[in-house]
Length: 221
Image 1: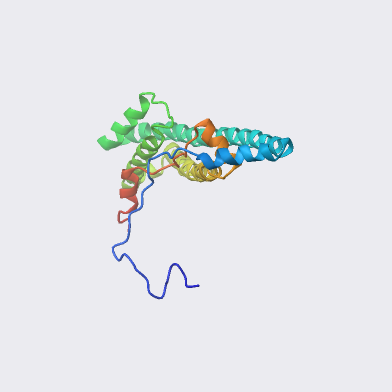
Image 2: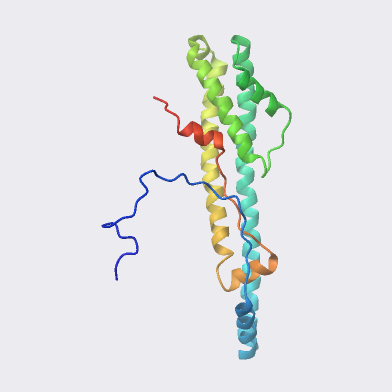
């Protein structure tokens, strides 16, 4: 049997491809075949029907627990983001007292100081603003050697770097849990039937903002 992907005679895209996460939730749906399957189990006898019923109860409990884990993983990201907000606000205040800080940095700091609550709808947006603030502060500190010697600023920037790594790790955990959810709700028959009856849909993993993607493509050296 030949390889489906024939590397010896490849069809390649020399221009490359820019892949984005699709912001769409897919509903779980089952057809008449699943209903016939369940009826057939009861027709075969009460024992097969009861076994499958208990399997569905187990699947329902599993999916509910997985939902709670997704919430927990999301809250970990939010906790780190909120800590980073405070750290960068303090750092921006210290830098602004020493130099005339870039207006865009101060504008983003002011927006975060307005008390915006991090949630599922704005998590990626706030993460992007934090990156913008951090980059602006880093450039300012690098341009002024006296700021690098400021202990409080150096400590704040170090904490920022640490939190940035923790956020990246927390995103990985969250996205892994979301991937497990998206796979499990389509696992036929038990989980898929339970998910369809409960009206579950796929979940969207953590995505990077357009600004972050553009910065990642920039020339740094």
